[in-house]
Image (tube, rainbow, N blue to C red; front, top):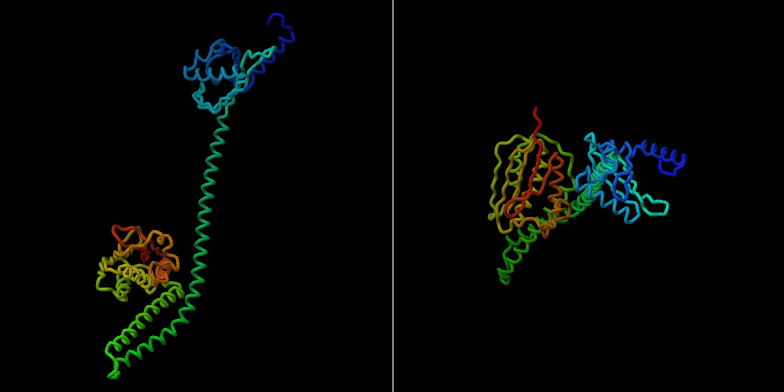
Length: 392
């Protein structure tokens, strides 16, 4: 009891000391010499030092110098500013070896005249709060990642749906236009054939120069060539428009490649390297896959205007047959690669851009896939993956 203190004041201080002692939060009081003048049991438990070893001492008496320097700077800030100072997210290993995360609030204690005589420190154990925050952060990141994944999947599904709708409309339009155009083309072809036969059989009048007759013959040949080119475009349109449900049967890939090659007009400047070992059958619709191979091979040949090498090989990988068709042509521009399998995308002046679209649709109908892959050297390489025939 201090001198002159009344009984009531003494009882009040005793009650207040008991309240501080029973607080669940560690609490301490320091004087202006940074000495501990009051600590409660919660602080003793978390610090591991008995009260008598703390009272009257400073942080330098039982803490590492670096830690004591840090606390001294914070204490000095309270005494100098007269404002509350908070130490957040302080990691501490308690007397039982458990790692805790603490938050300490230090506030000034003023005397009757307003001067700062002490500082009060209250420590909150926020270990569980931080654990919950970390769990919430991880859950939020996981949720955000799933939202992004689902959004991307939805966007891809929407793009695929739009692509299929466009292909369906384009297919209907292509089929109608192709049938309407093929009839007049047939008439033009027949008329050109009749003219060509008459020119060959007729004797020219004396006043007709041989050069004029040659020009007529050349003009008729141009008509034949252009009719054949237009007819090929119509064939592409019809192939694209009338893709049916595939009927899959065990089929030899080597036989289909040979058939697709036989239908090509192979320039003498293009050589073919065929590497097709004895391989198991593939479960495909032979007619449809032959058409797909024909389109890809035709594109490869047309890409080699100045000559080159067409390489076709196949092997097995991860339960699938892999067929590669590569050329040594000019290659595919980078700005076209991302839209390569879209309709009406082509690098050929007179192409419609339906060959690869049709080929992909036919291949995917067999349960397969086609991709453009990188290769060493010039040209382009397409890789076709096809399922093997299931074992009997």
